Length: 455
Image (cartoon, rainbow, N blue to C red; front, side, top):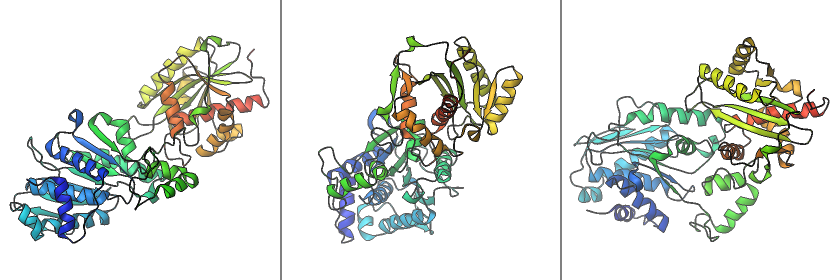
């Protein structure tokens, strides 16, 4: 039987549009073939391909579906992208290939049956259904109830670049994938293929790697190679990539290098952090807890972050960060336990942001006799918006005045990573950062008018 890379090349020749096939194209096609054969590394079933724009992504995705339907005429596919129009257009392109004479000569057993604007079927029960992210998939599924390959869910660019910094769009995409698309598998082993350019730390690829990384084989293909050459010079030269790196660092690292967290960090740089020896803890200084809380425990919702801080006139040291996704009763218990842990070390107050879950939490903790202050940014001369708060905090972080313990605590690296991922657009990676900015506002306010020492 013809190989997938041979099929890809033949398709271009059949349409008098010869295709350029570079080594990275063959790498992707080989991975697609592994999906069909069930031979991805480490027994993984799902494949994620991260690559720059305008590098042949959609041609590769469409031909995977066409080839899979030729090899397995009863296979069932869902093809989705960021819009219903795009998904329908790609489905029609696949239908045109399957209906062409050259295709029927290769795969005589795959015969067209019914066709509509957004889907078509074969005489053996196979189908391809195109749907935009967020659309209805009622009545359609992907895969067959058998051990061998029976189709797949293919996601071709879940978001467009213009929507990358919209928190609402990013959240809607994640929730639709988790709550709708993932449920359309006809078999537990039906593979999912995601092929996209990275757009944001919390785009669909970032969400998947944060919540189900053990189920995915990931291929990252950067536009600018380690040796300084371009992946496909005729599409984007090394000179243009270097220029983009200088004038728009975030776009360069996300869309072209597949690393939406720029090396060193986006707004908060990794090398700004300084460290302290926990043995130097001084109980005569101010110790307080800050909390940024969320309402739900689901992975698509925000987390809650509890942080204990040790303040001196010169430094603000983070003693512990405790972050997780908890329903409200568990949030109550976690906060009470966190307070009890640090009460014996001199903690004297909990600052909780005065918003929905925080307000309720603060009121209930006050009823238990715990000293809670419902924090409002205006009370501490801090901006109302999250990004503005971080910008006000950058001076302290860059100046080395905010410090982390140097004894290898397991929460330190996740804390640094989340701070580095904060993009400044207010669309995620901000739970720990919010609690941090609350601490900075309190410390700054006290330093400007109140002796920070206790007693």
